[in-house]
Image (cartoon, rainbow, N blue to C red; front, side):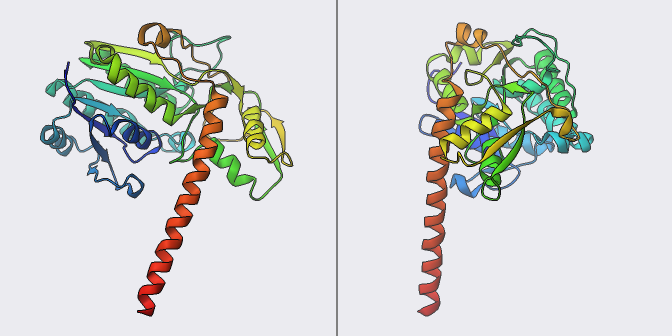
Length: 325
């Protein structure tokens, strides 16, 4: 286990979770961001590499020599995965196999993010890490297959299952709600699915704490699974109502609907509640209530929006001055 500052390679660094991980960890560790395409919002160079190109990926690992790999990259659009199964298997399973092989060969511990979608959602009560997985969608199956490969083959790995993820830099349920209320005052939202909305920033901060104070848990031999989400529980419909209340849009009404009326390609688990006792007991990690996290997210999202508008105005003014000069 490293005893001093070390490099962390983050796959999918330009994505929603990857971005917050980079920002949370970059002051304490050397961050090696890796993605398939540039991420201008990070304002830092990335290693551009397709995880399916094992030889090139190995070259990146060997040249940068990270002390830890955090594997965030994945194809997470559940409905797209359902209609593009081969691509989902490649991006979520084959890419993970390449990561595991290289990490094993070079002696690098791995952190992997999985999902509640490995379960069918039929259990009464919270899912334990030890409960049998039974995914009902292509996406869920690919994440389960990735988990299984890690558990069977990784020399040192931690799997974190996370749920109902949202963040400032990516597509998410809260952003979809805010986009819709710009055009309508009536929403219809699923009310028969329950889960825990989880803020990418809180996941990133939890990793920072673990790498600072409980590093032995991350670098230990063998592979382990933990559940990591914000606390509390809510349906999608009540989640939407909370967002509307926080942004002062009480004029918007939310009508409950059942999942069978969605008519989407991929089924969703009705119960996404993951038991968090193991993470608290073994890692000393417990995240804040989802309501507090969402409230902060909405403030930060507005700040980012204003900053982007100011940047665009400044750019336009500079270009105008250049044209006149």
